[in-house]
Length: 78
Image (tube, rainbow, N blue to C red; front, side):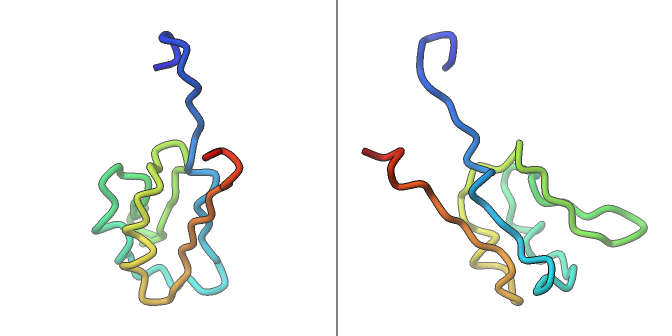
């Protein structure tokens, strides 16, 4: 897209995980279509790679602790 002159921005920067709320259950990793959320083994720690995130918001719905949040910069839509 960039080679065609289309501005491309990483929306993963607008996805936040509240570390205080997250209890590392991994529910978000099961629904993440891009692999941005994964489980580090054997520690069983949930990892988040913002570079892979498409901001689909499936993790927000799946998270029982409500630790995931998506905030878009609405000024970019104008």
